[in-house]
Image (cartoon, rainbow, N blue to C red; front, top):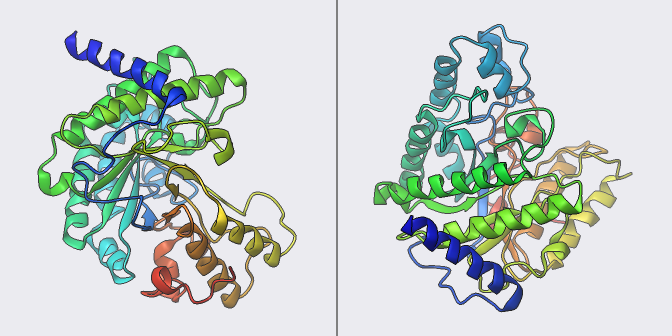
Length: 380
C-alpha cells in the first residue's frame, strides 16, 4: 500500500509538473548510455519475441498454422510454447552480434510484448512463461561482449495499441480503456522491476525503456488516454530505485509539434519517430531524399530517436548508388541537430529483402564500417 501511495503521489506531482515547469531530474544517474550526447546506430531484433509472419513464416509453417499473428498462433497450436522457445533460441545468435560489431553498431532495439512481464488475462492465449526475459538476458550478454546497448521496447500492450500483427494481435484497438491503460502501467512497473533485478553486468547495457510502440490514436479521447499513460509510465520509470534509465515514447505519428508541451527539458525522456517512405507514392527518388534531409534541421526539446526506418520506398531505389544515397542520407539526417541516432528495421528477414534487412545490406556492402561515422553518400 505504501509503495502504491508513493507511486500515486509521484504520478500526480508529475502530471502537474509536466504542464507547469521543467523537471529537475538527473537524466544520467546510473546509466551508461547518453541519448543527449551520443548517437545510436544499430538494428531492431524484429520477429524475435513477437512473431511477424511477413518477415519469416517458418515458426508458423512448423506447426502447419495459417495464423497471421502470435495471439492466434498461441491459441491454436498445441505445442506453441516449445515452437516459440525454439524460435527465441535460434532467430538471434552470437553471430548476429559479430555482424553488428563489424560495422560499429552500438545499439539494438528489442521488441517484446506485455505478456513477457505480466500475466495475461483469462482468454488471452499468449505464452507467458518467463522465456522471453531469459532470452533477453542472453542477448544482454552479447551486448556486454561487444559494447552494444539495448533499448527494451514494449511492442505489444494490453488490448493492442494499434491492432497490427506486430502488437501481437490483429484486430480492434483496445488499449485506450482505463482498464488496459492501468495494465500497461503495470507492465512498465514489471519491466522496471525486472531491469532493477538484473545482474549489474547485464543491467548496465540497457539504454532505455520504450513504453509503447506505434500507438494509433483515432480520437481526442485516445490522445488524452495516451498522454495519461505516458505520464503515469514516466512516473514509474522515474521512480525506479536504482537504475535511472530514460523513458522512450513514440510520437503516435502525430509529429514532434504535437508533443511540444510534454515532459519539458530536462525530463529524462526521449521521443521516438518512425519515418518510412514505403507507404505512399512520393513520385521520385529525389523527392524522397529531399524529404529525408528535412530531418537534418528538425529540433525538439528532448532527444529524438529514430527507432525504426528502412530502405523500402515508393518508388523504390532502383540502383545500388540510390540505395547507398538513401542509406547514408538517413544515417546523416537522423544524427543531426536533435537527432539521437537510429535503429534499422530490422536485423534480418527470411524473404530476401535487403530493404528490410540490416544484415543483408552488410553482406552487400551498402552498410559498412564507415556508414555511421562517414555516410559518404549522403545527399543532405
